[in-house]
Image (cartoon, rainbow, N blue to C red):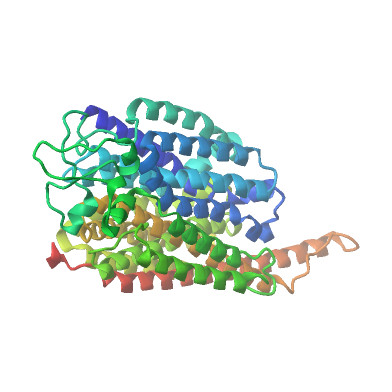
Length: 551
């Protein structure tokens, strides 16, 4: 038991390390942009620093976890930590936006795989009765990253500069690798509650056979390395089905269950990559989308449709919905996606509001954001108690509605934000409480509608949906916001101090600055109003969550 808890702690710490870096740049994006030559009025050129990490994170998460079924949990965790360290090194040394994006994307790919691998490790070491508690601990580590990440980034940047954040990752990953080597079982099948140590041959029931109604005595020998194992007969005389000896299509599909869904993973990554590329506009002055925007978005939509078709027809799937009530599960994923979009838009834009309209530095902006983050953390904790009392559906609906109210109030912030007083604090707390309270019912509903054998997979799917919402939400709303800012300021002429009286130049500069601030205020107001609409859609989607009577 002690070793299992140690493995859980180490895996959770690795997940937290990656989750922190998913949010670490939101409070220092302005500093990063200025350091690599991106002017403040063209921040759209720096958005791939955020979306690159998220794209890698989402694309890797559903695929690499399955690879650990073949090559072992510990080996894949080591590979992910090495990739994360390499991405951190590249980011720390980057002197241009392309180099930054490359480093952040590598970080995202490596970090995104840590969550499903750790959840799979829990499936190895805990039985079905104790497994939800362990999965909840890892999920809490993932959620903690969204709360601590912005503050962690701002604090380290204040001490060591923004590059120091990524230099610190190198010793942290080394420490994590040593801990993983000591605490995580090696081999392809770590032994635990569901995996007894070697000894006399015992029947081991496949989850796929169990779900298909196979006899309790039926066992599968092998798994991914079945060809290297001799066929053995269990003591009770029940048949052994060797993966290499499958003679029927059904047996073959079961033997392939441990194979990674390379086709599905590639189509998902392609769809997201095309959508993000289509939404990225380095010159948003005239149109929301770049010249390649519509073709990329259309191609991304086609790839998304192909992904759905693939997942329906393929015997090996990223998320197998066989026998699962699809309406409530898809509703939970939709709520998670919309909540994720609102969350990252808040983390990015509240920080930008603080730095551009209030004139604060990264640390000051992070302190403004703490109102939202503290409320998010408190509500996430209280959400579990509310779900126990009222059920998932009413809590999720109320949470998304409360968040919508918070964002509507934020969209009404005055231009002179410094004079708003505690109003800004109250509005941020309301939005944070709304989004935070949704976390527990979404996770609880997803786990309740699927068999226990798939809890790890569906938990990862909830996180993937939220990260997809973050990725697409920040990409789409940034494209809209930057276009609106450029269109609102296109007629402005930057005053120059040449050939004019200093007093006249000061007057023109003050007038120009006031108009730029007004344009920024309009941009932010519209973004938060759209975010309000996303939360209202989330409240509608939450109506399809399972009823409490289904408990």
